[in-house]
Image 1 (spheres, rainbow, N blue to C red):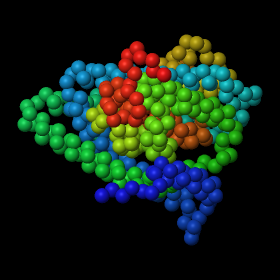
Image 2: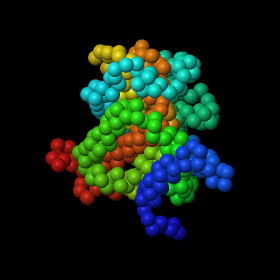
Image 3: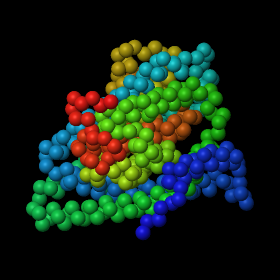
Image 4: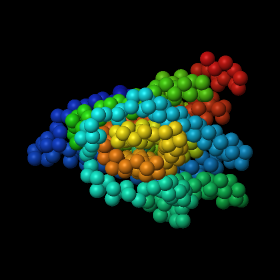
Length: 435
Ligand code: ASP
């Protein structure tokens, strides 16, 4: 029934993306057609696409985790899968942060002569920044994790509190396998049915991805312009370089050595998800497409992907963790504040924790950076220095976040002995030469 488009989807999205850059540059904020401002048209179409993706998040996360948990079944399987997932996520986030730390210390993008505010063109007014973020302190980290156990699961769902929803769904799926058969079967069929329906709707929405991506990117380019980048070019390229190292070096090495997988094939398989992540700047909104790519194109079983990916979209954010680290160091450098080893270590730890806790939505890092700044005693208004380029960097780091999740899914699937995953050769057994 399903008609295959002639041009593969990732090419369609890529072309849309390039066209969008030109369209955005051409129209700027003033371009209009028949009196209708084009930016408003882009914003309208982009929001429709985003809404369509977000509409799936709650039912998709809940149904996929419940089905995934029920599929994992026995407690020791669960322990193994859970352990691998947490281990992989912690390892990659930590590697990403260390790359960020290294690059930011080597390049020192914030070291300038003169007042940081003038050199970097402080974009936000200090008072409003203070008002927005003043209450963010180290205590907020506790708050993030307190919400993990929601007092009201319906409220958690309606407020988009992923951690709470995930926790409840994990419990639900776990106990689904521990009730009498007649109830368990009915429950499983129900949630599995819901999951299948969500994936079908994802199929439909994905057909509109090129249009949605075009609108979102054109809107960003039209409203950001290039001028904002000039003073922040060094910071921008520092982040770009660090993200690039993680994306092109660390993750491919992990894919190859831990999973026995050809990174090029994997990246090709998940490219629609990466491009959607780039355009939406939201890991959560991209989740339906990530799941579709990892299952359909990379051949990961539903059992693995429905456990690893929804968790990853919320707790595993390599790009975000890296960005938080670089941004905080940049702000410290810009204000001429030397950070000792102990403080840098605190930053690493806080970047790791907050990247787990913050939601997969646009600009979520800003809240995390505010928390870190106040925890290590740096001026909060420093956030204003990076706002001008945050959106584009958000797009880039979100693509890295989603890439990290997808790599986790295939690596864990391979380690569980799944045969259908992208590879031409068997996974190296422990102790085998992986090269
Ligand atoms: N936008 C990012 C994401 O959704 C989070 C962030 O770094 O702001 O993954």
